[in-house]
Length: 111
Image 1 (cartoon, rainbow, N blue to C red):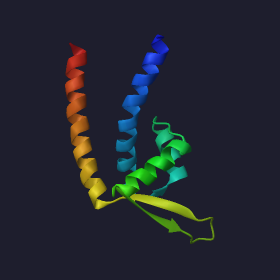
Image 2 (image 1 turned 135 degrees about the vertical axis):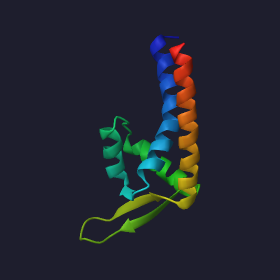
Image 3 (image 1 turned 180 degrees about the vertical axis):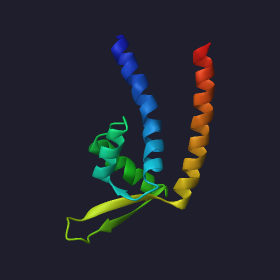
Image 4 (image 1 turned 90 degrees about the vertical axis):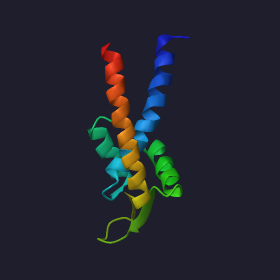
């Protein structure tokens, strides 16, 4: 197996969890999918719409997000997502775990 193939698999595994953490954090303020794709890309976490929308639906079905259609302002209807109270609780725990993990990983990698 080539190094590139091995690395691609590792990067994909790490990215899955990171994306969930990013989505929950960013959606503490209501946003629609395309806007979220742009915001994440601007912060160095690119995600494609065909990856994001199924994730949003899954997080909503788990009770971590809620959605509402915005049909005002004469613009085309957009579905806005926002982290629920349960989602914020989960985000708090994920952030705590992330911070502990990165602290411990930095110690390991510095050795």
